[in-house]
Image 1 (spheres, helix red, strand yellow):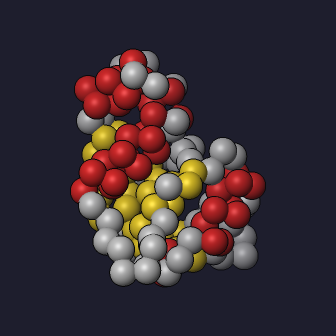
Image 2 (cartoon, rainbow, N blue to C red):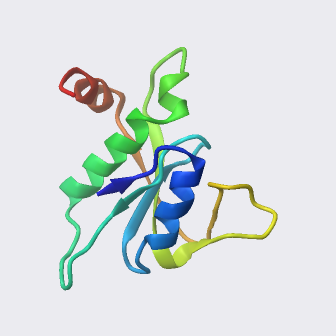
Length: 115
């Protein structure tokens, strides 16, 4: 799993994501992009997706700046569904198709307690 640290790093991360690899980002702006890397013939399990979603949520602005902590909506998409328009700023992308899940408040808090 790879994750971006800032807008420039997110830009690099998205560019290297394989067309069939999963990428995650919070529904709201201000989170790392997280890319789950695949080996040839490998399938991504639900546990991998949950861990990536928790990481994405934990380091998002939606979580860090929330006055009242709650579940964080996460979008999951493939590398081939990401696009970049000329007028989009660094670290910003559009997505053609995505699935939505939620990183649960209790799971994010538990993740914070245990590192």
